[in-house]
Image 1 (cartoon, rainbow, N blue to C red):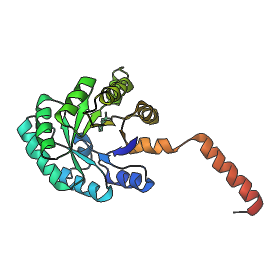
Image 2: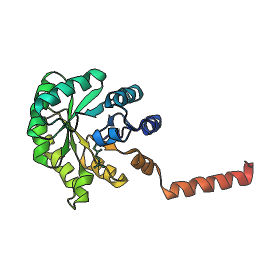
Image 3: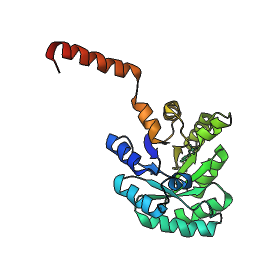
Image 4: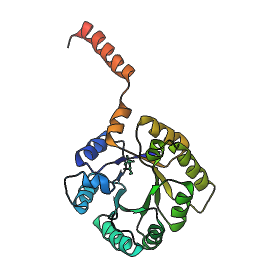
Length: 219
Ligand code: G3P
């Protein structure tokens, strides 16, 4: 399973990139809005200068018609060759995905909460689908069940080469579960990446090695 970082915060993207553990970035209108009013265009271009991999930028949250999404998707795609256009999972979004995909523009259909939504997005030509497992957990529906269903449905259909980006990741267990379920990618908030690096026994082990070393060799 590949790891992307799910943020528009440049310093976190740099930290994740320096660890060598990510190969892409996803953003969304809420994440962009957190970056102090900087334009999406400027943020996405800076991200593309840091990470050499798929960078998802979403059409405006207020654009709900296919024509508008298509026009904006073309502009996003022009920002950098690694740009992926994030499109919300609606009927209009499917129409926009079909057109943009036919023009060779990669689309990431997002806000997916059912296997049927993922299937439709794949059939429309999406390069990626983003099922939000954390938000399902938030409403007491096991999000991992959705990931497992999509993995199975896509594996059963040789025509589908759409990649599954497990999104709305809340904790390290989500990452493990998605890897075991066969998701192609998990897009992980940077704080969760940091949590993934930690284990108390590692800390205890380092402390003991240091103590034993210093006892014999000094600082
Ligand atoms: O990429 C989608 C992700 O950012 C949504 O996560 O935490 O807002 O459910 P969250």
